[in-house]
Image (cartoon, rainbow, N blue to C red):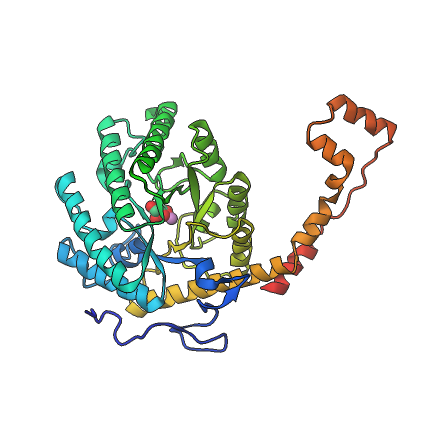
Amino acid sequence: MNTGFFGDIKKIKYEGPESTNPLAYRFYNPDEVVAGKRLEDHLRFAVAYWHSFAWPGGDPFGGQTFERPWFGDTMENAKLKADVAFEMFSLLGAPYYCFHDADVRPEASTFAESAARLDEIADYFADKQKKTGIKLLWGTANLFSHRRFMSGAATNPDPDVFAYAAATVKKCIDVTKRLKGENYVLWGGREGYETLLNTDLKREQEQAGRFLSLVVDYKHRIGFKGTILIEPKPQEPTKHQYDYDVATVYGFLKKFGLENEVKVNIEQGHAILAGHSFEHELALANALGIFGSIDMNRNDYQSGWDTDQFPNNVPEMALAYYQVLQAGGFKTGGTNFDAKLRRQSLDPQDLLIAHIGGMDCCARGLKAAARMIEDKALSGPLEERYAGWKSAEGKAMLSGKRTLEEIAERVVKKKIEPQPKSGRQEFLENVVNRYV
Ligand code: XUL
Ligand code: CO
């Protein structure tokens, strides 16, 4: 059944860089082979259910701007929403989608009834996945919108909330597994605090560690093969969030012995809020062995909150996908558009155009990154910069074969006086600009 929401728009096709058709891809040709792999298999695009289908267009100063025929709290609404969602995934040729429980079914008055509704929608999704070939990149639980979670989910002072959150995550992992989801995400929107005056920070960290251990343990017990991902974010909604950035998450995973079990889902906008560049977070996750997936959006660089805009900056994307490719590309992860329209973008077409632009921008970035790698445009100069470490003495110092005294003795004996060398930053920036 066609809902007619997108009128007579046909499946979006690749028309090449010269096309002026706003409903066509100019750079994303899913079948194009780049660095030995189809673009579709490199990028693994996913549409985020919440922004495109559940968000009403509100901001802190005003409510709903979007009028959607599925807005409302009934299961009929939820099914219409699913119909339109899968229509959009198909029109875009997006191979994946992602959702929270709260995005897809109306909340009921009891936990059991809410869970039954989620099952009913999961059946509906399973059927649509089978018919369209569209897959679930990840599932997750919304443990931050309802007022019961206002003081945290796993890190709540009330153990009943911890239990309720645990039951919710169990249910959402079950549903994710049933829908063959390739990952399960935990974003701790309320796992943090507003003021230390009412917060036992040490206890809350222990609660978060216990919660994650329970989740990992459950995943293995039911044989869920997907990756568990934590999504770092420094603040918003809570002032201080425990999963601040990649480095903080890694420290947390180490403390609880989970660094080989859990990876990170890195969001561009969250990196910016943490005072990092996206590529910094990606490079660090790769260096620490916890790179998993990305949430693709861009933040406004001036406003200081999470604006979740569709990406449109090719040089930024090139540097980001450079890191993704350096990490060996996505395994179970992918590129999830955790991005929303501006609240004045009312038309159904706007939803398509936003994703088309984002997908094109990512494709351009990835292609530029692949060319930089092929030409060793950055890795060549990098290798040269560290070449001294290939010397016998460099290797001996690094592998622990020299004591501090021996190193000091050699500096005196060999009269070592290091000569500074240019870091060539401007040269390298110009090199990147040749590719984008
Ligand atoms: C919030 C955010 C979430 C997570 C999933 O900033 O990014 O949508 O991606 O809960
Ligand atoms: Co996100």
